[in-house]
Length: 338
Image (cartoon, rainbow, N blue to C red; front, top):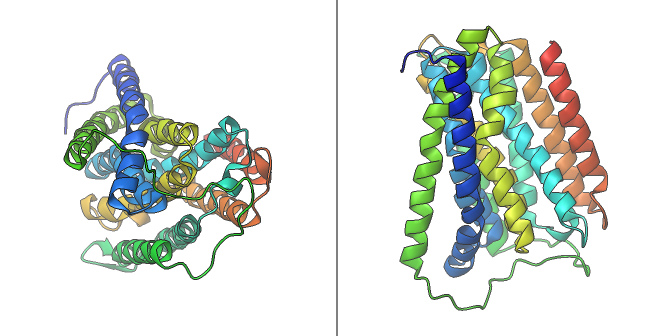
């Protein structure tokens, strides 16, 4: 761990990291969209595994930095705050797609499964917080269950893409995930190399954002759950904002929703890693009430999004988009005043 940074240095690191993440995020969407077509994995799976998981790397590293530094509330709130912010980003992306409601147009069984898996993961995290004594060798039993549930969810998501048991009804506004037939001069190897270097740059910012976040907590006395839930989580989530808007603009709607929902399920795994890195027992036992509130907010926002994916309002931002924006704004106000 580095020494605590001054407030100006921390702000400078936040600003520089945000600019880097915004720049790299712009290119991510097109590369992953092409990989989804060239490899045959489909936009929903590519969004969840490649785009969602990779753009989550800064948040993962920031959470680990917080756990190693001994600030449980900062570490866990960074993960949960990222999920709530990214879900809200989907509503913002919906505003940029004027042809139809985004959840309607991007109707996809894999994305729906990922949303339901996310609710299950959030419920497990909440169990860890209310029953912290269920630990073995300092690791809560919930942590490995998070990993197993995530892996099981990926298997179901992949299977539902390859052999779906039911389909959402197609309408004129539905954008079906069909691989592009346009030939590209870029080789598959070159695409993977581009993906790898962008992933490395994105991941590298996480260390500096995490250290700056801990410095902000120690230097200002602001609660770790506030800094993690509202500052570092939003900064490390900027790649998701850029890639989801970029995906919508190029018409990769299933990829856009898969990026957010799939990335959110991956973000819950931050708690598994944080529990391993936290040195003084299960990390769930050391979080504050603000962190517990973020779990409830995450579950509520994910449930609203899931209902939107099923109800499929045809036009406008939809009831789910308006509700997500309102819930996030209300959540910020509550977190600041707990």
